[in-house]
Amino acid sequence: MILEKLYIDGFGKFSDYSLNFSPSIQILYGENEAGKSTIHAFIQAMLYGIPKGASKKEVFFQYRPFSKALGFGGSLTFSHQGKSYRVQRDFLQGG
Image (cartoon, rainbow, N blue to C red):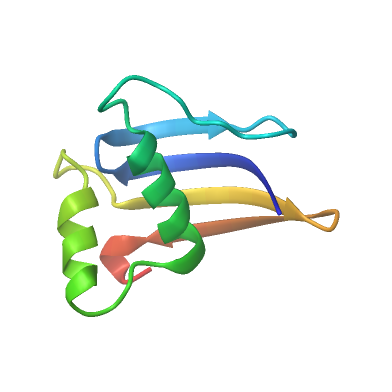
């Protein structure tokens, strides 16, 4: 699987944020509190959803958008074996 791009409508500190990945190795780096872990959590939530039960509440409250006016979700585009896929989730709608 090769990550191509992501769009965050709202997730943690990010809103209306796009990130295009290069076709080779992916490395996220930056200063402390830059959002590296938030992007990792977003990718994980896009691929696997937000877990059910008590941990769902923790993730929901930890990563809900800082601004209440925003959506809570986004999209992730990736390719696998020559085919391109796009996953879109709205976590407020149970996505």
